[in-house]
Length: 396
Image (cartoon, rainbow, N blue to C red):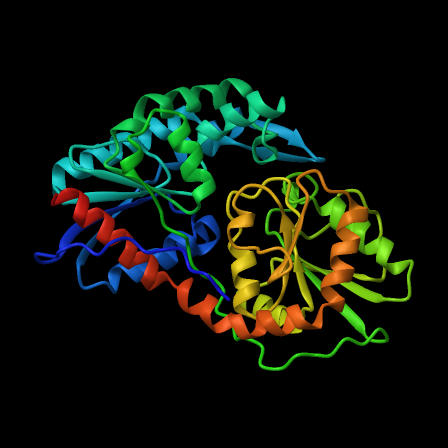
């Protein structure tokens, strides 16, 4: 049975609120943070309790170009820059945020990511914070793979900035209980100001209506989605899934690994015939692949949330993730998929993929649950939860 995360308690509305929406957009706004801010923006614009005002956090090229060059580093054979996490970017966007608040006086501001406080109540939506870096390094002895190519001095400066500023927000809305609990543990934020608001689907999916019976003779399809090719071997654990499927090839089962995202695999000069690469596939192609997939697998070493798992479940595809971060909040081991242990190996993952392909009862159950998953993980629900939190906070 699908269990939904409780929504926020509805607030008493006395007319619409004016909400500033602060996002550091990509050149193509829709692609920012895997389409999440754009999808949320459209849902907020459709909410009758909100008048939305965009606060674009952008920097002129004469500022960004030197930053990009200064923070450039060689990583996995390519040049890459972590300039977006520079304190200079934060200070520029923070100043823009404060000027906009003084000029337009919205009732509140919703920031995607933490860009500091302003003269009106500020709310943050996040899946992860810089404060995690501090805790993860202390606990594990190494930096979270998401930030493995960033300079230590720059990250330390951003951690210090967030430690000073984060307690001043009127509310922080996290995608997961995992992130919210970590934030409360810091002691820097009033626990009553921390809320869990799960995100929604960015890929429009069509749930499967028919179960394909187990058949050892046919080729099974294991789907992996990860847009950032330089994180494929680190945070996304692409090496583990490739080794796991390679082990399955040694048996009688025919398995094809479909990898959506990277244009190449850094450690492979030539691809095995059982791997299909789909570089930068648009959403409609991902939708088609979900229809054909027998299991969705992403054994990430780091995954702050993982909307791709939800999209797979909404399409009626069992999922395999890792028993870490937010993944256990929506992957129920043995019910809608499997959880690889926190330090799980390719051998363990191969066993889980094999079990998922054989578990006809689970696959049928995931198909039955798919409409409920799609109905709950919808952006209008996210917008309602956020507006209720914001209005109840500023009007209490």
